[in-house]
Image (cartoon, rainbow, N blue to C red; front, side, top):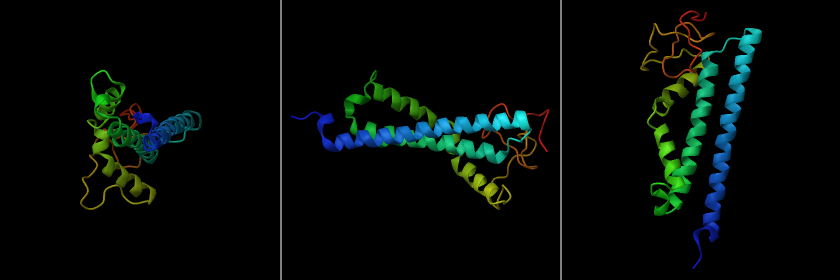
Length: 166
């Protein structure tokens, strides 16, 4: 009897998961490098770190998490067999760690984040008719357009009541 790893279709699943995990890792690294470059430009050149920069980088990181989740949940966990779900197994740990991500705010706020990112890119007001308005009175990011404030959707450390932006 052949072992699972000897089956051609199982080898394809592993290859597909490797490709997706590699893509997610590349996106995380690229996002971190872009964030550092924007921070450097802010400090050295005074270039504002905009709400659009923040939303784009957050959407990139969220997309990387979704790719990694699909690799684990949609490929590896599904094809790994029930033994891989036992406590103490590596796959169970991966499943648990990625499942924790889904309990945070970012996945729940994705539609709003992407809509506002698209609206900023297209030069439209952030809030369309019928959208929940951005709450006023919250600190804004450096370089953030007037009238736009962020709560949980921002990069920690950039909001400041001492420097609320333009």
